[in-house]
Amino acid sequence: MSRRILVVEDEALIADAIAARLRSEGFDVNVAQDGPSGVAFAQRFEPDLVILDLMLPGMDGLEVCRRIQHDKHVPVLMLTARDDETDLVVGLAVGADDYMTKPFSMRELVARVQALLRRVGAVSERSQARSIHLGHSLEIDVDGRRVRRDGEIVHLTPTEFDLLVFFAERPGRVATRELLLSEVWGYSDGSGARTVDSHVRTLRRKLGDDVIRTVHGVGYALGEADDSPTPTTAPISDAPSERT
Image 1 (cartoon, rainbow, N blue to C red):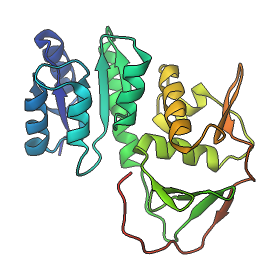
Image 2: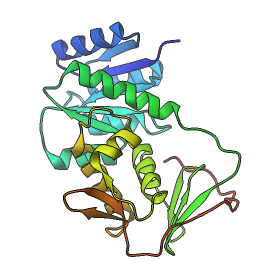
Image 3: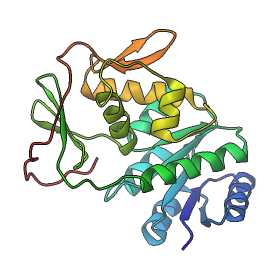
Image 4: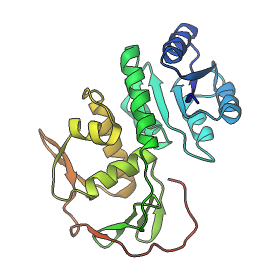
């Protein structure tokens, strides 16, 4: 069965070009040209991935993203004609997994779509509960995909969660942006360095500035303000599951 993709884009030429290219790659594609239609299509179509323009008539892309993510996470690739860092960070914060700035190549868009779908499909089940403690305040329930800071659930997007786990499982090791794009996002061409920077900023805002440190001229590493992370296989509490 082919994977379903919803394209929410009000510029007909762009929407048609994206849809045609993705269909040629074997995807089942639906197109919506305004915000309310995008939300309605998402509810009926139940897409595996959404390509979502930031600027839409009727309802902007940020609100569309919030609404389609309300019940469960759907991978979202956000498109924007503006290179405004504030908009992009907000977009990532409300659940977008990545973004592309117009104009973009169809080849790169297809590569990012395929990488996002591979990453979602690669989440594997483990037989034993596993958690990682960062210092005294932060706990990562790897298999339950939950994060607690001082005992309180912190809501992370799936990409933010995967990025945090990548760092937590490699304490003391510096990761370049290229490595992060390859290992967390699944991108092979090294494009999208600003995506990494934006996700790091949102993690710092949610978890504290000391969680991830910048290694200037190289990349990022787990922060050093707390003790080293301690992986454990202790059973995770039976608290109700929270969506990340």
